[in-house]
Image: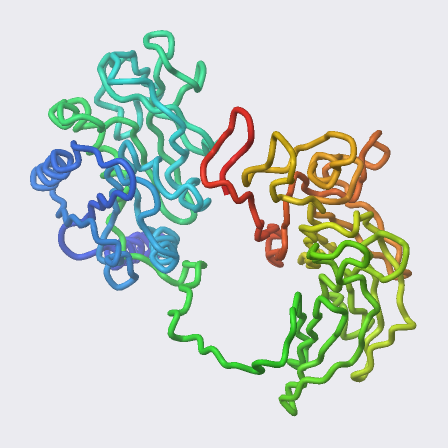
Length: 525
C-alpha cells in the first residue's frame, strides 16, 4: 500500500511540475515579415492565413515588420516566432543575441520560404533555419514533392507519398546535416534543380535548446489557399509551440552586448605622433607605438606621458629615385602572448642598408628599456625598393599562440607613362621585362614569394619557428613557401585574429576601379 501511495505521490508531483511550467492562456506566436532584399507579394496573404489558422486552432497571432520587437521582454511572451519570407539582414547584433537567448530558453521557430534567404553572415541562424538559399529556376514549375516522413505532425495528413504542385523551388547551400528531412523535391520532374537526388524542401530539428521547422513552400498567394499546405504549415507551428512551456532563461548562454553609449572614448594623447603604424597595449595599460620612420614610443599610463624609447635605422624614403613615395619603414609592432614572462616585442621593419628586405624580428623590452642589441631575426621578406607601393606589415597573434604577419604586393597600382595598356585602377598585371613593379603576379600571385600574403608561423622559444599543419602549402611542396596562410592580397594593411575561435580578419586596401571588369581586368574597388 505504501508503494502505491509513493507512486501516486510521484505522478501527482510530476503533473504539478508540468502544469506549473506551462504558460497561462492560449499560446502566442509572432509573425515577423521584415525584408531588406526581395519582398514577396504573398506576405500579406500568408499573414492572413496564419491568423486564420490561429483563430481556428487555439493560438493567438501577433505580426510585425519591426525588428525592435526582438528584445527579451517582448519575445518571452511568445511560444514560437515565424519568419515569413524575410530576406537579407533583418536584425542587428543586439536583436540577434536576444533571439538566440529566446531559442536557448526553449522557444520555437518556423521558417517559411525565403527565411533561408536571410542573415547569410549569421552562422547560428543558418544552423537554426537549416540551410541558405542558393538559387531557383525561373517561375513556379510543377514538380513532385516526396513525403519522407508521415509520422511527423506537419506531414502526417498526406495520404500519398507524392505531392504534385507548383511552387518557386529553392536550391540550397550550407545545409545543416542534423535536420530531419520531411519532404524532398524530385529534380527529374522539373528543370533547374541543383541539390541532386536528396533535394530537401521541408525539415525540422531541435537546435540550441529550442525547436525549429522550415518549409520551402509559400511563394505564391495560391499556396495559402491549399488545404494540404495549410495543414503542413499548421503542423510546423504546433511543433514549434511544443508544450507551450514557459521559457527558462537560466539556460541561455548568449550574452546581450552592451549599448554603444556604455562605452566612452578618452583621448590619451593628441598631436604627438608622426605616421604611427601599429600599437600594442601592455598589462599595466602602457602602450607601445611604432612609427614608420623607425621610432618606438611609450605611452606611460601612470604619468600619461609619451617618450621615445628606441629608434630603428630603417629604409623609409627612396635614395636614388626623387618624387617616388616609399612606404616602407617600421610597419608592424606586437607583444608576445607571453610577454609578462618572456618580454618579447615583435617588429616588422625595413632595415637600412643594401639588403632589400622587410624583416620580422623580436626584441626584449624590460622595465621600460627597449634593447636593440637583443634582436632575434626571424624572417626576411624580399622587397623591391625605390618604388611605391603596398607594404602590409601588421602583426597579430591568435588565441592558440600562432603568429600572423601581413605583407603587401610591393607593386605600383598607378598608370605607367608611355604604356599602351595601363592599370586604370585594376590590379597591376604588366609582365613585360623591365616593368616588374607593375606586375602583382610576381608577388601576390606567386606561390614561391612571401609578398601579397598573410603568413602564419608557430614561434619557438629560441626564436626559430615551425609551420602549422594546415597552412596553404604543406612543407616540401615544390615552388611554394610553407609560411603562406592566405595569398592574392593587394595590401592587407592591418589584421586581427579573434582569440576565441582564431578567425582572421584584415582590412584590404583594394583596387581603385569603380566598376567590375571580371572578364578582362578584375573586380572594382
